[in-house]
Every structure is written in C-alpha cells, then in structure tokens.
Length: 183
Image (tube, rainbow, N blue to C red; front, side, top):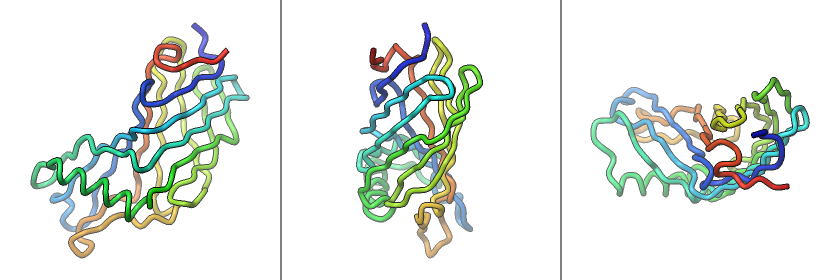
C-alpha cells in the first residue's frame, strides 16, 4: 500500500506525547514525566518533496501518564496538579500549532521544517518523520522551552527544575490503518 496522499491524524490514529526531564540540586526528588495530548488533529499530505503537515493541539487536553524517578510515586492528585500548573503557568491554555514550510524526502524519511506556535510565540523548528509503507508513522522533535519564552517550571526555591528541553513524539499506526485517507 502506498502512503502517498492526504491523511487525517488524531488520537485514534496514534499517540502525541511529551517527555520531560528534571535538573537542579534536588533533581532526584522530582519526576521525569510522560504526558499525552488528548485532543489534537493533523493533516499529513505525503507527496515526496511537496509533503506538508499541519497540526493543532489543545493544550488543555494534556494528561500525565506516568512520572518516573522521584522520591515518591505520583498519585492522581499530583498528576492533576501538574496539568493545572501547565494550563495556568506554562501554556496559558493556548492552542499549539505547527505548519510545515519546507521538506526534503529520502524514500520514506522526511525532514520537515516549519513554524511552531507555542505559548503565543511562533518560531521555526525542524524534525524527522518516518512514513514507511505498511509501517508505523514515527516523528520526534526536541523543543527548548526558553526558545518560546517559557520559563521551565521550578520548585523548592529553584533546587528542582523541569529541564528546558522537552521531547515531543508521535507514534502512529501504519497509514491507512487508523488514519483517514482522503481521495
């Protein structure tokens, strides 16, 4: 099956996730978080060098899936407080958008460049996308929060901080399996 064509993507076709790390003098007390975006949609037009991608994500739809490390296990209240802090202090309940502006293709691998709007600021970003025929759709990008004017969250008088770099990844079903191809 060819992957060329227009594909509508969302939570039914794959997982859009964020992974945070921790730094600071008492980093061992904190958690590395895995956060899933619950409400998002993307349109991927696979057409070799003319490939395009647009994505919109609701920043208020985040859910903490797990917190690894740390001195104590994260409970449901802790996870809810983390999401509330992200909503109110980090992303300010603003949608996240990406629009590709340039692409290079090498078989089923694409290097996409474009504009990411995050926390009200738009800046360029690039990342790799793998879209093999019959294989899983995979993408990953590292976002440095301070590049978008976001001050990484700190607590304990700055002794525990969320790392500036956050990894955003997409792991999706083979195109055609969970995506909605358009004619």
